[in-house]
Length: 244
Image 1: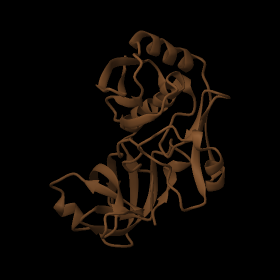
Image 2 (image 1 turned 180 degrees about the horizontal axis):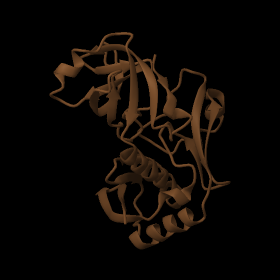
Image 3 (image 1 turned 180 degrees about the vertical axis):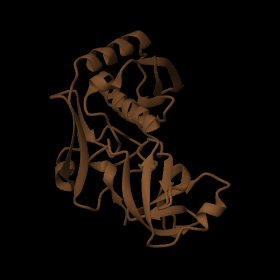
Image 4 (image 1 turned 90 degrees about the horizontal axis):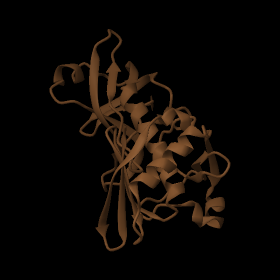
């Protein structure tokens, strides 16, 4: 398996790692700071540095899949095209330095935490989510109209309040006893390890299972505005966020 260093410390920008293998899915390491696509959040990009300083540019990060297409406990770092000469030099057991594109990651962290604030302002179930470095969106299962200005002001108020953002965990049994903690209709928290990662914002702003990367305090989000609200279907309202 790949040790997921980003789960407990989203601020780690680089880490030493050992190469396990290179295959059609990408470069697999024993440990990584790269977040793989999941939970609506885009996968990280960055570089893997060889011992001599040569950089293998990573365009995306994904969970490895088995022969049946099911996600495994390993993570694949997907190289940018045209680097066959560097890939040919990689050997299992080699030491590498994994370094994320921090500026891009920090935008993802700010946007992801913003979507949790949006969940506080719109207490409806979410049936779709996308978080990139350019924008973020949530699709809410609802029919009532929403107002851009009111939501933008609400997010600004929660950002200015400087609420702490804490990583925690609960057991599978805790979640079974409190199913309302899950606010997504489309993505269920991963099970199997006995513990489910959670994110708590402030004392009562937001608390839900989440595997993504977040800032440590809402004040770090900065100026985020609602750029668009769309009626995607009779029962879906899409809210799109952007940086001001």
